[in-house]
Each structure stands twice: as structure tokens, then as C-alpha cells.
Amino acid sequence: MSAPPRYLAGYPPALVEQVSSLMAQDRLAEVLLRKYPHAHAVRTDRALYDYVLALKNEYLRSAGPLSKVMFDSKLHDIRQALGTHTSISRVQGARLKTKREIRVAAVFREMPEEFLRMIVVH
Image (cartoon, rainbow, N blue to C red; front, side, top):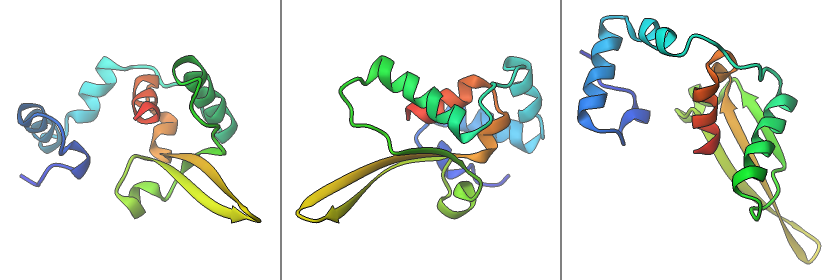
């Protein structure tokens, strides 16, 4: 049996074992589709930005504004991550400007809404 994916490292060993077993039997997709049969309607970067902004305004009103929210097709390959939240600081004159961006792996375009929400809020 192969090692579990790195993004499962923080989960309890029993859950990791269960997921690894389903992956080895090639049944993980079947189980997930049974539990979450419908995909979300968020398909474009603009729709993703609106979705994230609605969540931010509901739960994190005092947080700083987001500069960019997008689906990234290279994210899973390059950073071995399902999503990233980064702050980039730049000097503009005498001021320090900070831009915040959220990138979500493109694989979440066709996933159920529960998975997209999980990635966005983390």
C-alpha cells in the first residue's frame, strides 16, 4: 500500500487508514459520489470571488480585503496543496501595500459545494 497523501497528515490515523484503504481498492470516488452527489455552480474565477467574498462578509467582516481569488490549474502540481492563502507586501513610495490572494486548485471546479467550502475557509 502506498503512503497517504501529505494533505491528510493532520487527520487521525483511523481516518487516514480508512481513506488509504478506499484508495487502494479504487472505491474512494464511488463513496464520495454517494455521499455528495451534486456539484456546485461556481465555475469561473469571478463566481469564486463572489462566493469567497460572501463567506468573508458573513464571518470575517473586519478582515482585510481580498485582492484576488482564482482557480489555479498548476497549484496541486507545484505546491502539493489544494489551496493557498498568501499575503504579498510591496513598497509603493513611502507606504507598504499588502495584497491578499486565495488560490484554489482547479480540481475543485467540479467538486461538491462542501469540498469547495472546506478549502476556501481553511
